[in-house]
Length: 300
Image (cartoon, rainbow, N blue to C red; front, side, top):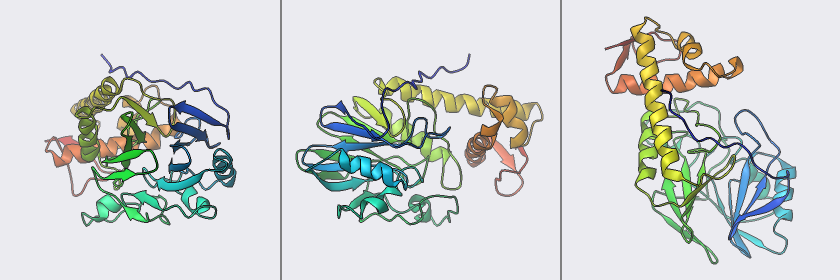
């Protein structure tokens, strides 16, 4: 039986309008809907007076103007970045024209892989470098709020979640979303790291998740458990493909993603590649040479 993930996609909002979504938490959603962003990028405002901003979003001057209009008379003291995809961090450069608030992140695009000696050439915000690099468990204190940094590589190698400690609310970026699973795309994306990061969340006491895209996740642990089960199910599907002599990713995807439109097959193929890379590293599968998107795979 296929794993059932309790997806929720419905969200009541207006582009450019600020909404108070929880005590001390406001959100403004950018008008950049797509198959990868759902309704668009949700930028969160933490606190009152001297506030933190989480994920300023894409390079969209209108969104930045809407964000600033949401906090008249207030000051941005911190800018926190979950990761460096183009719908999350480029807004930092535009925001800098209006605020001198320092940015906080794990590092530039590919930072987690670069630290391992792996070059990352995938697309991302190559212009962003945080003013302050943070590490797992680091606490960032502001005016009336305190945030814990939670390092969750996998979707990207520099992905962070941020917990508002007073309410145990975790801002999950693209690591865990309520409307969709995350795309894991090597070389910066890493399935082994992603699975470890999901399991990390099961050991935490977070009360609610606020992803950058889509609605809140009000039952975090069952949701994460379903995500883990889903990835294991995908690996089982890959094993079944190889048992039937289907050895190439382009042939696996249509068999595995029956409810996915064809224009999403390339993205699905990247996730299958990530899973196969992981399976090769753990000795479940093998290929000639290094794993590639175009390679042929077989069970060991």
